[in-house]
Length: 95
Picture (tube, rainbow, N blue to C red):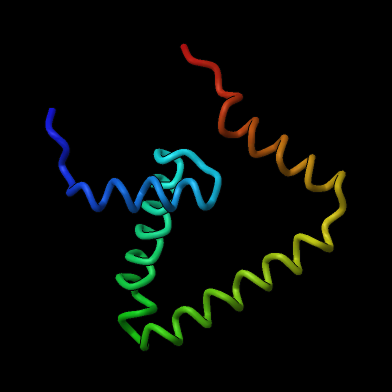
């Protein structure tokens, strides 16, 4: 199968992967995840209802609130919630 991208793309990919000390495939996957996340933000109902900067600011605030909340939850409660979620997801027996 012939290369899909130009030689300069592969050179840039190799250079960036080396700079950040990750494999080329790992670099591409991280970049793709980041790009998809940005596209979802741009297409979100919140962004459509307001401007993109307001939506990003809202997402930042929500993230900070979630981090603040989870910092107040004890380690035992986290483990209990995790166990309950895992049981709900994987604990069902197949017939």
